Every structure is written in structure tokens, then in C-alpha cells.
Image (tube, rainbow, N blue to C red; front, side, top):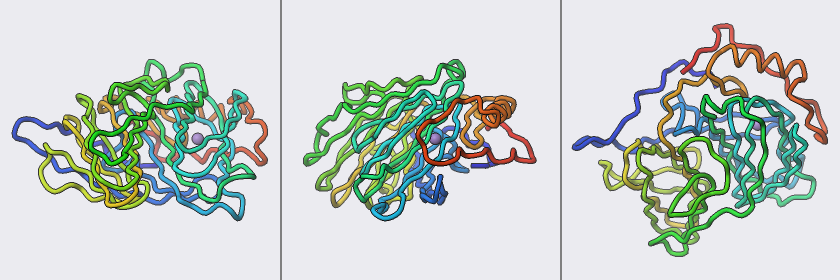
Length: 322
Ligand code: MN
């Protein structure tokens, strides 16, 4: 997660000025006990999309043999975690005492605020396939130390997408097409799943001032915008299409059954300090959180069969906002 490049200036679509849809490649990372993920955010060239500051895409993995996903108890501050599955089943536990299974189409939303610890694991009885995304949302400075909270949302709005052949849009976070997710958010943002059961093309109006990122969960897809020069960007799993703030709409298309996940929001003005599982505004806040975790002050995650994760050593060069 270390990255010394400052975030490039946000681009905007002014009259006569057009920008291509950027395609960013994931880097491979491991979480917990061996699950490999494609890390799409943060990137050297793109730290955040709106307040979305972390995006891992994993699977589809066959977890029918072995233990499956095992992410031992670890702490968070200054962010919300959003867990979203395309296939499979995951069990969440946290230091508030929550114990919650999550299935495809449901959102587990944990607001860390001043501090929470959680674990995520494959339950013993589960479908074989595991496929999903793990996202973080940076809390605004005014709420970064809010009270920790956990919410499970099993009933999210699903909209029939105009023009798509049976296509639907699930409003995971924020508002789209007149429907609002019940999930509590602290900044202007949106999270959507677009489902194309037989491929096809769907155009989504963009929210004013939002930038967007699109990932393809299942296979190749094309991401375009009528206002953006050039051919639509071709992405596949492991790639993120970025559309700059100011685009009027997003067109997604695929030749076969496809699910895409879209994150969007007003570009973040704050400089964040992100280190390990912490999001903060200053290095001191990170060091304090690390000390508090080492001292056992985040509370206990009961029921997880295994030791909590220890924080890695702080970087010798120090922690800088960016
Ligand atoms: Mn976590």
C-alpha cells in the first residue's frame, strides 16, 4: 500500500476538452491466510475515487477444499468497510459482537470510526465458489472518530436498467435512478452492481461532479462515455476503468452474461494518511491506532479460531499525507 506519488490533479471536462477513459491494472496482493486479490485501489496514479479509497477484487476461487477465506481479527480506524459478494458465503465477526453471514446481493457495512476490529472467514458449510469485492470508504474528517457501527443490508433497491435486455442495477450505496440504498454514507458517493444476464449495453446517467471507476467481475466488458474521445475502454477482471469527474453518463456493454461493479463520488479534497488497515489525516493518528491495537484496546473479536493479526513495523521513512 505504500506509494510515494502524489495524486494527480483531478481532471474535468471543460468545453472542448476531452479525456480518454483511463484503464488501470490491478496488482496482486494476499490477504489473511492466502486468499489472493486483485488490488485496484489505491493506485500510484489514482489514490481514490470519491471517498472510495481501497478496492480489492477476488475470485472466483474454488473453496470447496481447504479452509477457504480466513482473515484473522484486525483493526480499522477512519473508514467504512463494504463487503460485497458475486458468489459464495462469508462470515463476519467484530468487536461489537456482530456475527453476520453475507450472501451475494447483500451488503455488510462496517463503520470503524474511532476503532473496531473484525474477522472474515468462509463458514464450514458453504458453496464452492467465492467471488467478491472488498471496499473501503474514507470517512470525512468530521466523522473519522465517530462511534463504531456494523450494519447488514439484505434488501437493497434493484432497478430494471433501461435499454438492457433484462439488465438490472443494484443500488449498493448512495442513490441512483431515484432509488436510495439504506446504507449510511458520510459523503456524496455511489456503489452499484450492473447485471447483464445476456450481455448487451446499458447507459447510466452520471451524478453531477462524480468521478467513476468500473470493474468487470466476470469477463471482458467495454466502458465508454459519449462525451469522451476515442473508442470505449476494454476491460476484463483485474482492470479498472476510470472516468473523470464531469462525465454525463457511463455506457457499459458486454457480449455475454456479466456483472460489473461501479464506484463513484465527488473527488476527495482531503489528503489521507493510509497505512495498513488505518485511514487518518495525520501520522500521529496512525501511530496511536497501531499502539492501541498492540495494547488490545480495540476489543475482542469472539469466536474466530486463530490469533489476531499483528501490525507490521512502521515504515522507516515515516508516514506522509497524500
Ligand atoms: Mn478489514
